[in-house]
Image 1 (cartoon, rainbow, N blue to C red):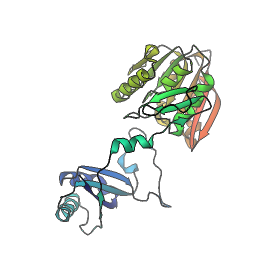
Image 2: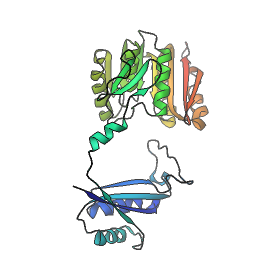
Image 3: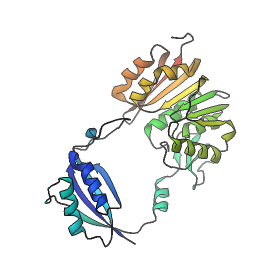
Image 4: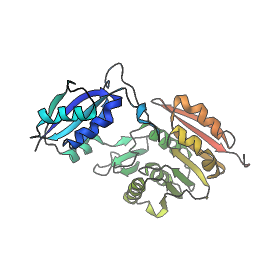
Length: 300
């Protein structure tokens, strides 16, 4: 079976209403992207939780998927009228062939070399280096496949600071990649915390695949037990809000890594943790920053 994709550009104010109208007209799915993607006016977007739709791109490209026999000549003008978009708005129709999406997706994820001794290996691949520390991972609904700069920064931090036997807290664990890495590097136990149940399911699954589930706890409740190493790969605003909690959850003399921070936000995040930590590490990759620090021995 094949499908038809209708592609058109609209102002951001109409994107949501037109998406709804296209779906009501029979579209199977609607994708929204930056209409300027690939050009000089492209705007990279780093959305934080609670961001308003108005923060999206000013011109948006909608791609609606229809069944092959859909009567687009009638359906598209109907959707445009219903959403208040001028009916003369140009659009194009593309054929979408049948595809093995599972195999195509798997081809996109290949083993990633993090360092000389640390690899991330999708479960359908053989490890390139059987002597390395191989983290077996199934990409899923949760963030954390090792391809993003913020994750790589945290993996490098864990490799540098897990010496063996430490307790570790992975706050905002996503897929559990950092928690699993900590255990494989020698941590004695790890608590992986996330508010997303899908993330916790993915983290538990990945812990089982890596045979570290006996030292692994995935939970939505951070608890009160401080850890010797705390890693939080989230975003700048939640990191700032969570500063009192993450400070309490880091043992005196323990270390913390804060990631998911754009370079321009680093000073604000640093200031939020200044009373509880001596920030002595700073790492950058692809416009992202990671802060690392040691917890004060006093209550700060």
